Image 1 (spheres, rainbow, N blue to C red):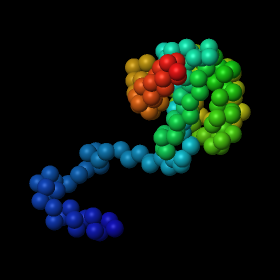
Image 2 (cartoon, one colour):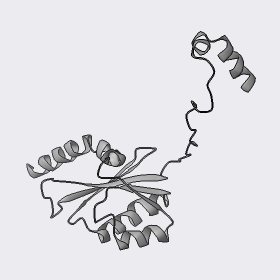
Image 3 (tube, rainbow, N blue to C red):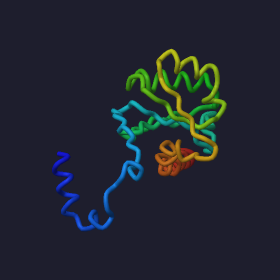
Image 4 (cartoon, helix red, strand yellow):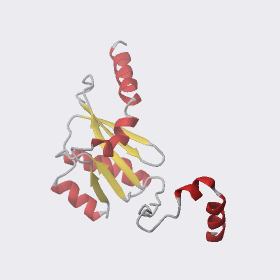
Length: 159
């Protein structure tokens, strides 16, 4: 294969004009991470929505590979509720993930969550305040979700 690459570069006009690539000019190689379905989940809260049965928030978890969405309407945004959601909606149904990505909210970054993730050997990755796009998966999946859920709650209230 290296011989084929060498011959290809030798016959390429652009490569000939550029010249040889030295070790200094080469880009650093990073290993490709192998990620299966349900290995990496993004989690975040969505609000505000019309209050329905006392529920104010929607907890949204999105699988980064399959884009599968799990959502639950909740009354609070505390760690106890998140742990129960993760155990029943993610761990029990799809298996324990390798990583969980969230923002730096106190409901995600606390001792209870740390203990749960340590117990199940899940890596917790958090987005920085300077680059919130790290946790964009739940938000980007949520682009259609708020309008869908908002429309459904409005329909339900008018019945």
